[in-house]
Image 1 (cartoon, rainbow, N blue to C red):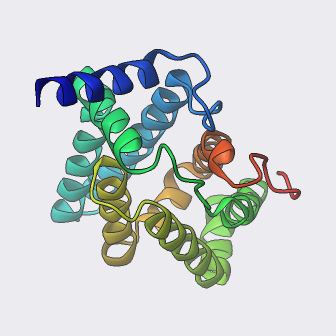
Image 2 (image 1 turned 60 degrees about the horizontal axis):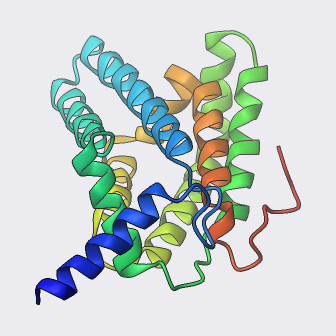
Length: 205
């Protein structure tokens, strides 16, 4: 039993310390921290916007989500992520929804070229259904990929619930569309090496 635990610990440690782990060269510690930092920044702005318009419960939910993401930036969170990956996905060729992420990022990038707040609000109302469908496709793809219990799936499930019940996607578009595009791009780059082909989709931003 002790040998088994030691073996697992060494596997996880080697995963965390290897500069370019097998089948996951894009999964760098720097990219992971950048992704989480940008996510927390967006969530904080969403929480402030909700609080300003009187949605106290919605603001509290988003702050709680941001706090949970913060846990993944400390050592215990990195260990949890490494354990989750090694235990559930290390030997699996993951089919991540990279094309859906690319399409969503390209669509969201349009809002940054719209102009005034009034025109942005109009653009969102005209395009929200398509954006919602794309975001749901991305989330469902991630849930199919990260199908086992662990830090990765729990994070995706939490985001899914807030998108469905709290219009998180709309809030992202209103408070920081450019950062949202950046988040999607980093996420795509981070996950690209998990795809069976090990490459990014042909249609880039």
